[in-house]
Each structure stands twice: as structure tokens, then as C-alpha cells.
Image (cartoon, rainbow, N blue to C red; front, top):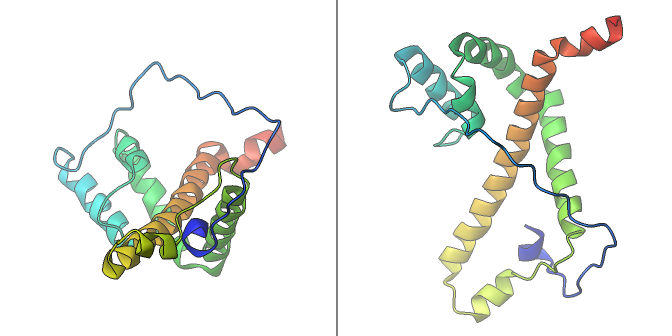
Length: 163
């Protein structure tokens, strides 16, 4: 999004090496919509409708391996989606992503003016910017939703306090 609105021309230099990507020995097992039981497909449809997206993130498909968990998770999360606290945290995650993006070592150079100069039709530019903005919004929601699941799986953090 920043590259569209305010591209950088300089490259940021950092002495910190890139983090090594973890190696996963097992592939995630996903319950795709086409093969999911009817009750799970109903939850999937509700998730898509509530989040305003035509597709599901893979973590929902993975959670569906445990239908009771997916049901309890979604039942607990869904009402929170409409709260000011949820929106405040979602916006904070979005802003954090934009701040971190500005610190990337490679300059962001994809302004709408550059795309126009390259002959990209205005309608396509608008669609690209809209898609990137939608992705950023959806990603901030997904991060918050995964954090919600993690907290729930950790017993709301109370197990560490009691120990």
C-alpha cells in the first residue's frame, strides 16, 4: 500500500540478518470445502460471510480437522468481530504491518504514477490498489483470529498465572 502512495527510492540497510525460515516436516491436513461435512461447510459459509471474503484461510481448513474445536472457536470469535476492541486491534495490526513494511531493506517502488507511465489502464490500477488494501485488511483480521485461537488453546493464559 505504501508503494502505491509514497514509494521510497532509497534502500534501507540493516545489519540484522534475515530470520531462517522454519522447516516443516509434515504437511498440514486441510478439510477442503468440497469434502467437508455439511455442518463444517455451514461454519465455513458463516466465516466467509462474516469476514466478507469469498475464500477461507488455510488455518480454518486445518481447524476443521477437529470439528468440535472449529465450532467452539467460531462461536466464541464471531461476536467479537463486531466489537470496537476487535476493530481497534485489527487497525493496530494493520498499522504495524505498514510500519514494518517501511523498514524493508528493498525500496518499495510501485507508485500508481509509475504504473500509469507504464501503460497500465486506470481501472486496473484501481483494482490492484483495492486488492492490496483488501489483502492488508484480511491479513490483519487473520492474524488477530489466529491469536484468539492461540490464547484459547493456552487456556486464556490462566494456566501460566496459576503455575
